[in-house]
Every structure is written in structure tokens, then in C-alpha cells.
Image 1 (cartoon, helix red, strand yellow):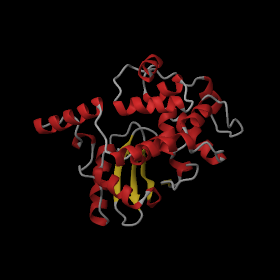
Image 2 (tube, rainbow, N blue to C red; image 1 turned 90 degrees about the vertical axis):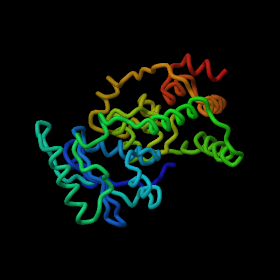
Image 3 (spheres, helix red, strand yellow; image 1 turned 120 degrees about the vertical axis):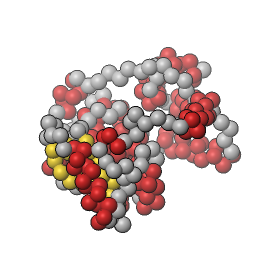
Length: 270
């Protein structure tokens, strides 16, 4: 869709290139998610927004409220700016989680700090089995109900038909910023709801040249060449590839969308 209710980054122009401690706030109930980042705040903001829009956020409580209340009811704020050399990232994240927990409630499950995360924690055998079973389903495909098939069909048709309208200059500028921040055209398309072909044309500097943004010309000249490693696609993805191919997508576009080589696309579409 060309217009959508966005999660706002408060004072983006002031903080977008800085690093430190931030929060995502539910404006309806005041509950917050606290985080730290050593990457640019704006890139971290885009990462969270992409995950939430794709129902893939690591914090399930935040994801559930996002799904319930809608994106426009959340905002991204910077709490404290830090220097890359600072050793206070963990200390301040823990402090702010405790402070906000008593004030308005937090989505954070862990107490904060990198050491409190799941890195290095051994999985139980039951958890491993659940993940393995889920992966088997994703890799081999599963038979969908007629209702699910209808929804998938409508969704795919929508992906092809919608978003071929002319973009606003503001949206085109946002897309350029996301591309410059290192997101693939396929990731930007998913995050914004704009058709992949339009995003890829912006990435290739074929369209919206009139939308000026600092550093774009240098980015375009040295833009990344995305490489793909071979992987197995699910039956659902194979059907999508065939459908998109019938609707005019090229092998190159499909390879970028699914993170595989063009040879893999040629193999599966046949």
C-alpha cells in the first residue's frame, strides 16, 4: 500500500545517526520495550519495525500488542546517547528497564545487558524437538485447508496487483534511506508494503531520481552486489515463484527476493 500508519521515530533528524539506549512505547498503555544499540538508532528502528510488520519480533508480548493495537500506536524514542567507546551500555539498559518497570511496565523479559540474553544458553531437548519439527514442516511443505489456500491466493494476487501506483516523494525518500542503511530491496519491499519491482528500480536508480538525499549518488556508485548461497525452498515458496514468474517477475528479481541464485530459480520454476 502506498499509504500506511507508521510507527514514528521521535526526533529522528536529531538522533538517527547516534547510538545508545532507546525504547519502543505503546502510546495507549505507556508500556515500553527498552533496548541498546551500537548501530545507528535509525537502522535499529527500521530493524524493529520490519520484524513487527512481519510478525517476527523476538519479544512476543510486544508483537501481540502491536498486532492488537496497530503500528500507529507505537513510537520509537531515544533515552540516552552514548559513545562507541562507552562501557555503560549494559549498565544503563538494566537501569532503565528497572526504572520503567516500576513506572509504567515493560515488555522486556530479561533484566537487560548482553549477558542476560539467550546467547550461550543450552536448549532443552523438548525445545530442540519443537524447532526441528517446525523446520521439517517449513522445508517439506504442508497441506493447507481450502480457507488457507484462498487467503494465500488473495495475498499473492495482492502482492502483484497492488502498490504499482506512483509513490509520494516522502515514501521514495524513506526507501532510499532504508537501502542506504543496508537493507536489501526485498526487505524494504516487505517493510513498506511497496511492490518489490518499484523498490528494485529505485535501488538501480532507474526511477525517482528527482528525490534528492545526501549520500545517495555515492551509495549508488558503490551499491552492494548481493550474493546468494544455495538453499532448499518450501513447496509454498516454489508455488509463489511460479505465480510471480507468470506475472512478469524476472529470474534476477525472484533470486533477490528469495535469497537464492538465478540457477535455483530456473530449476524450481520448471
